[in-house]
Image (cartoon, rainbow, N blue to C red; front, side):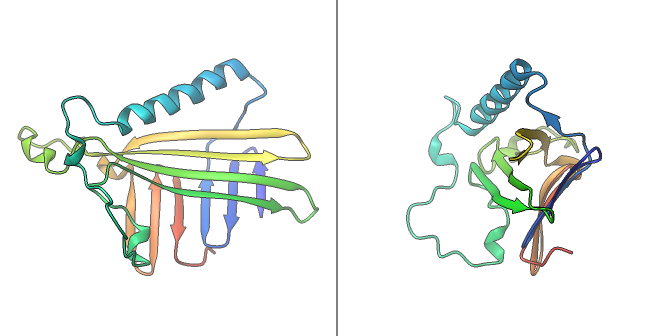
Length: 186
């Protein structure tokens, strides 16, 4: 089921669900502004994803061989690794036969190496975090020749973003967006 409406975008596809109540933006309205906005979003993500000159790349965990993944546990976050993402794409057909494409991605980026929080000053701030989350959602209306997209950014602090593991379900969330993995969406 795909729905594009004034109240936002609702996507459902098997075991994931994304709901946003913010107004979707149409790229055709202001292509220059939107082009630069997407560019800055990508640049921001690349900056927080790459090691700075003062950091040793080995300060973060690395994958050096087979992972021996265990699900549903490994649907969740893997702190200590610099970057990971949850990525959903698909094609949908509405009840009246209209075709839509969708993409939803949540990114988690650890902005300081494991253990860096031990050097933070006291008293601790509720705003302080080692994790930044970014999300991007897009819907393409094939027949209508429209592409709607939006994105969010938040720190993990104060429950603004994160990953919750409630077996058998994992929930990735960023503000009022979420994706549920492992349980049937209702």
